[in-house]
Image (cartoon, rainbow, N blue to C red; front, side):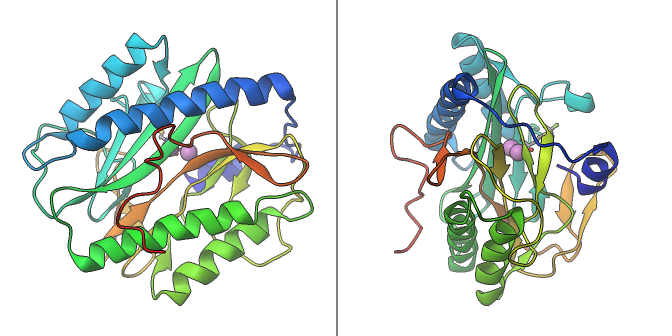
Length: 273
Ligand code: MF3
Ligand code: CO
Ligand code: CO
């Protein structure tokens, strides 16, 4: 979410600590959101429009008694976000066909029994270039390194530092204008999860905290701007941008990922070991 808004809305620094019912609810919502991405994955092909993906996601939500959280959220007009190439996040589905060589982030948030499952992945449209595949690979790994740092005793800064250190080491840059966020029965809650920073900074992680990690990584400079539509964020230098997102909950020993794909599709084939 937008960092300035997030900071302005933060009236105190109490962070919700959730119990077992919340974890069960988040598990269900997260799984359904991941399944929506599994359904969309094979539809990402040259010639298909992002509006068609939006229609499929909306139908999927309706068929499963879920509600697409983005629809009408602060005026957002569609059910999912579709961010192509140099679009960093919050791209609005439209009737333009995708083209061979594009890369796209699809971000799905479904509300199931009041709980929000929020997750996004990158997909190549047809054949992506090697540099695009490398960017997506680095972004996926940066998310997973952030998740590795999400455990009791660590801080939110440890998560950001792990992500930033790795991505910058790969000669990529981290977008600083958007962050991960607490969620549950609220879409965007405390705490903010910055994808950069220093170890030990921020707030101490405790069992029961629930939030997203959703690093946006650019091949060029980190600066972004928001287009006239009020939503679409793009890289100022028009360099390629990628993002992956999971919703997680801190447990006694580490964390639980709510948005894993039951089909095992969360880790894309272009990710190298
Ligand atoms: N799913 C996005 C996130 O990860 C938020 C989308 S809000 C919208 O936080 F209004 F743009 F859809
Ligand atoms: Co999110
Ligand atoms: Co999201």
